[in-house]
Image 1 (spheres, rainbow, N blue to C red):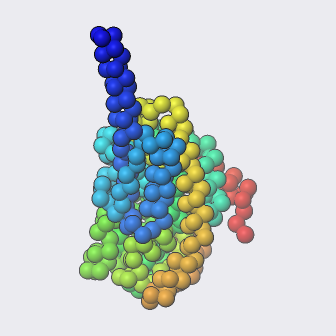
Image 2 (image 1 turned 180 degrees about the vertical axis):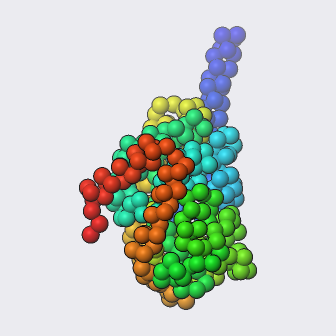
Image 3 (image 1 turned 90 degrees about the vertical axis):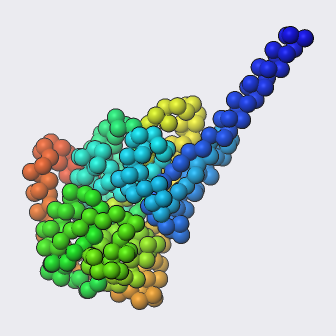
Length: 332
């Protein structure tokens, strides 16, 4: 009887342990509203992880900055308070300052160049890996697109933005760039941007087309200038401690899911960007094709500012990789 009781107890213990593992819930945070591609990507990732781990891990996708703004999301990843986050590449510079260089203007000029940079450039691999010391493991790079300008007045050249207050995320390169154009960059959390535009706190903001569309910034700043000034994907990261706590099989499942979603997200942004512009135009927005060359020429001063702040070997390493990629995939 005693032996039977011990066996039953062990069986129950194993079963309960398996049940507990099946109920492990992971939290994923991002800033976009629920109707956009970013949230679709987050939900797709959750579904893939659940299926690949046979339900051992359930991912809850939290949208609209409910778990915090971009900087706060990464702080929570760092502290282990949440498990996954995706936010702009420039936001990661709060953890690894050198990553702000990825937001240099006109570093790449096409999606193909951008994907090659983030997936295969030695510089990116090296500096992404350094985030692990901050408990942040970057698993893949999801998409957002090139940053564009939305303003309350038409902007065709850099001269047109002079004196305007423009909302930016907290990023040194953004400050250098817009100050160089003669604007007044103002750091405002993403979730407060619509109201800031509506109330006249700022005159303009800049974000990729999918973000402008889903956040409806065109309703309060109807002139959309396609400046393409910064390629701005959204690296997808995970708590390093959570990653290390998983079995090898589950780690692999998470990595594969992150990369598969990245591939889908990239294709979706490229496929739907023109439709988003058409939809915003139909709802009253004015789409402007500005003098991109003028913006690019004036943006060169941003690289000069970066050269004053960062060691030459760091800055030149990135610029060398970007130049090689531009040569490999020339702009049509």
